Image 1 (tube, rainbow over the protein chains, first blue to last red):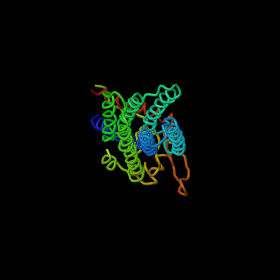
Image 2 (image 1 turned 180 degrees about the vertical axis):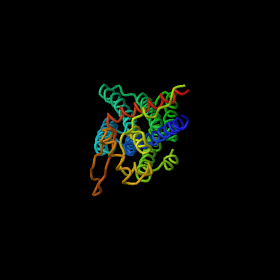
Image 3 (image 1 turned 90 degrees about the vertical axis):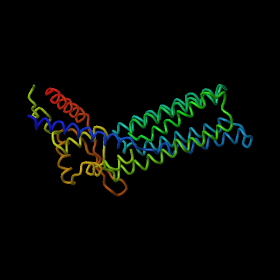
Image 4 (image 1 turned 90 degrees about the horizontal axis):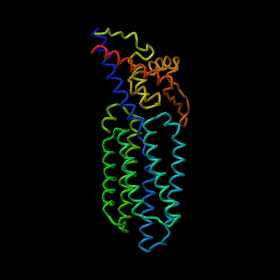
Length: 210
Length: 100
């Protein structure tokens, strides 16, 4: 029955198109990045001022509040958005990648701080690698090609720090800028795309965003 | 060449709007009523009718809530719906494959 067969093929193509739309709609939310980007940038800036002798040299006093505020804010955002993202597998997938990133950095940072073995280069390599991976996962899940560029930015920083012997004070400013350019601004863009997809969003706007 | 028999497909899903609904929800997990209406290009009444049929089969669940003062209906795919859609896809692909 050629007609039935043709219809089945059309149905399959339609299913794929709708699933692609659903997949894109599922994975767009930059709220956490809008929180963490400026927070981390502020941490690096204060650390730079501390290293430059303009503020007391207390590593824990800078970063522990950053992590506490960041995780508390993330928890609050997570609760607020739990209802809206219920069952959204895409958002769950990259949310898990980011949560893993946050936990890994924390698990590295806290024991190193307590044991007095903290190595700025090691935490920088770990963080840039995990950020690159998380953005790569995000790009895959959301289907937004420009997010690969953000992942490449973090991968570039990873490569740059890999060939260095140590983190110098100026690098802290580079990292602060990276947190704004490669975390906060993508977060802002993702939130806008997410809002557009939810509130006016048809396939055309999704394609434009991709 | 085997016969292509569309009657072996799940009748609850087999229909343009319901198929689109199930496919979209399968990937998105959940969606607002207005979002679904826009994606599928159907009227309120038309979407409600199709959703009701899927709800009766246990394939989707609708949660009503208020966002500010506006009522909002959020539709999600159930586990039964997920399994039914997977079976539908498998059957459809099997039917197409059987004709090769």
